[in-house]
Picture: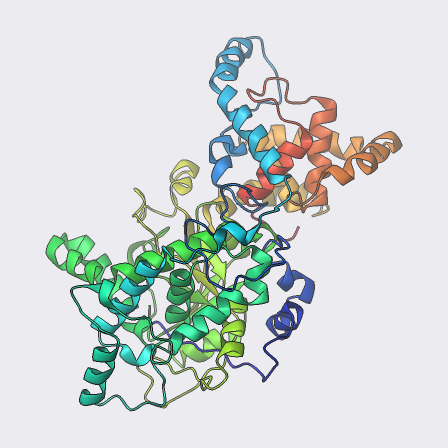
Length: 544
């Protein structure tokens, strides 16, 4: 995949403008409501902006106060692993007793998780104001790596002509040493990029999140999204994949060592924002353009479920098509790719908008890699997907494999449309494909009057059995017509907060709890708990 150098173009605004004005621009032109864009990340209401940037250890993190989008603690309590059965039988009682003991820790973990989730994020940054920043050395190592790889131009004033003598003078002033990053002097007058990084750290959008990112995290994100070093970085990521295939350990190690700090900080930043982000609400497609790249056989040429490098995607399909040019492909990311539990991604629109408020002198230009016509693309909205850390066992399995095989992959791909020179490839999460055929079959029985995610939940609780799921949905449709049940949902609706964004799924799970249709479930969960787990795990469908 050919990577693109990206810099957003922002209108001139006062640096004291509120976060709402930032999200006004993010929402413009993308089909996203202002409220939806402003609620992309959880709001923790931090009212104090630190005068000095706290360290990694002292920054308010996810662990003490878990937010609605942090799914790390519910992996062991995933609803897909429940061995629920609609039709009870005598021989299941023995298994139930055994499974109940085995899942005791799961119930305890879930209870603690809910208590943490419902706790108010009330943290004082007073203890975070330390004179010595523990993140400083990581930042120095990252900047030294950028300079060592020949990209000093990305961190100094762009107006400065970097002749050989000038480069030596700058390195001497910064006390640069390729073998010892501790000596590097973080002089903001020379490394003007640091001013931009610190401005983003203190911006209103980051403050609302509770300052989850450190300076090194923000530095890595901005370098990848706006600077020229991202091109060479992406090429090395692809080379590592090729070396993994040929098992060239020496070359692979050299490729990793060259950008190891950049890779580590960027992946960690995406992981942190991915946990903070309310991805379960994402309902738009994303697009990525590939110039002069066309696939003939997806199963053999595409490593399904594996991203060899970080992928930058756009909300606007026209941008991806312009990057693709007259020949190539467009990757179309289904919303389930954002919602999926095992796919790390984060929206960086707020970060790009804030960065140019803090550095208005930088010309907002986007140049395409290997673009001889000097085309330009202006974009201020995007989502970055993290590279995969390992290849799944069945990454290149046949598309006709069983559901069990598909679940071992994080995502799948198929050609949606194509002509002689261009093609569009649709990427969907494995959970989207897991019950797609069964969902469409059941939906047609009721003329598409039932929410697709309700059918998906019914299939999960029925272990994929279409007949049992159909019976369950039939009972549900009759149950919700009763006035007493409508009043019951109205009384309980205020309990479905923060996490349970789909009211149709909430009502269905309330029916499951009220009618006790799952008497042999190994883990006792009420409607709110089940709805929370399904929402956090990522409901795959966006429409009926």
